[in-house]
Length: 110
Length: 113
View 1: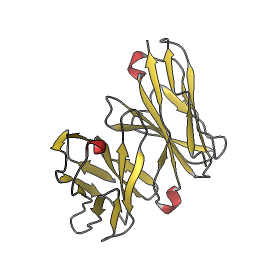
View 2: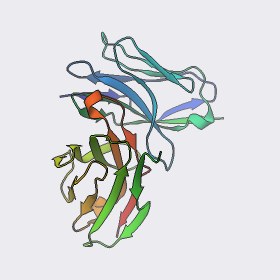
View 3: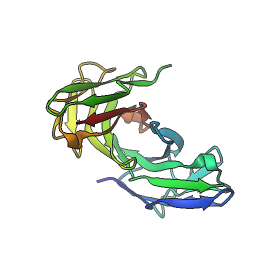
């Protein structure tokens, strides 16, 4: 079945550092891939998405590229801010099945 | 557009009591989901519905029931609450026929004492 694996956290960075959160997936067919963000005390919000191979999703300085050859969708940001501290979830949808990774907590210090 | 609405926002419930968590969406999505989130991290799927009139079990369905009488509403019922059901519950919906993203409610924080 479909599955998503993302790196365990917490990831602790200083402000303006470069961020990578790894995400790999297993799926049949051609799933759509997503990154969600959850700020403290809130629900999940869509951060970015990609619907086909080689697509790059981007939003708020974050980006991720749909790599079919490596079955990956790593999240990157060139310079993180304290306000980026949150939990990030990688997810996929394929054949009507919605699957989430376990989440990675990001802590950014000033 | 309201999107997806959950009620109540939070609740303290005595063990053994029943409770229904409400979820309503106005996006005409075919699919709806209930997740629980413990310790602020991983989501676990409780039940889902791919269309009105049908429901399915997720990975942690025991102690919970759902119904999908129409497209918009997907209530989650705890028949006899136990302390291990203390969690934050999220409802979500999506147009799963198009493989599009899911939209989440703001969550219900439930404490069973």
